[in-house]
Each structure stands twice: as structure tokens, then as C-alpha cells.
Image (tube, rainbow, N blue to C red; front, side, top):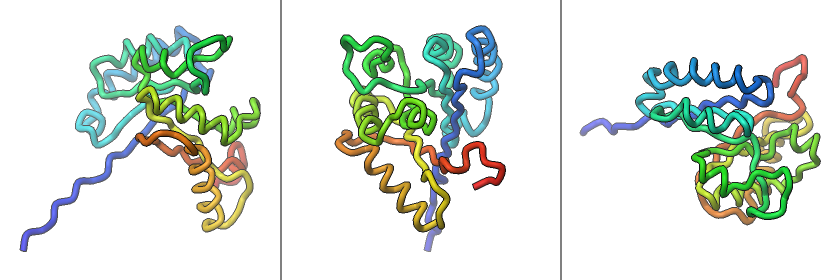
Length: 186
């Protein structure tokens, strides 16, 4: 009897630059990281999928720096609205047009600072998926609870964040909200 061959699961690793780097520093960082990522055996073989999420103004230089590598470039958010009269928004259609592959959606900071709800997050996930981008859904329970309840709360949030969205790939970025900045790790 022959042994069954199993393929190891692909690991996804990503980094959001938030707004820590100015434009020049981010461009230098892309130039430094791109060749290292491309040469990494895990990334080169496809065993590790690596994405970088810069600020909107840094997306085009990131796409240029990571061209020819397997590194994906993403956006830190995406508008829930189609292109139109939405000042300050960045439409999924435009992000997809320039080559953005992933869109970070539902981050705890956006929920807290901009009162984004699961309903808004679901509309953003719909916009991203409708334009071929993979949502990176930021999920996690807001209060400390036992593992079973935390899992249930997180699964419910994931379902709410995808309500009405078309089928497609989704990355779930789990971080318990109560643990962000806490002195004790989750």
C-alpha cells in the first residue's frame, strides 16, 4: 500500500505599513524588501504567500518595486461605493485596475475611529470581491472570554462581515480587540 502524499498548506504572511512610513522611507523599504522576499525559498516556491499593504499614495511605487515577484500589494481599506461622487473614497474598481490584490477591511481602528460596522464591512468585502481582490478581514472579539465563546463570536463576526458578498477567496486576520495594546498577551 502506497503512502498518501499530502501537500502542506500554504502559509500567508502580510504586513500593513499603516502610516508609519513617509513616501520616501516606504519606497526605500520596498526596494530593500522586494529582492529579499523574491529570493526567500518559501515565497519563491509558493509555500508562503506574502503581501504588503502600504498607504494609498505608496501603492504605485510598491507595485513597481514588487513587479516580477510573487509578493502581493494591497490597500489599507476600500470604498463600499462604486465609482462616483464620493470625495475621499478609493473605489475597488480603481484599486483593481492598478493591480491591487488584497484589501484590508474591518480593522479594529476603523471600527473604533470611524464607527465602521459589520454591515459596512460586508459592503466593502462585496466591493473588493466583485473586483477580484481578496479581502483581508480583520476579526476578533471585543471582550476577553473563554476560547469556545471567543471562537463563536469571531465566526459570527466573519459571517456578518461577508453577508451578501459574492463567493471568492477571503483571508481572516484574527486579533482579539481586547488584546490590542494590552500588557498581557492574548
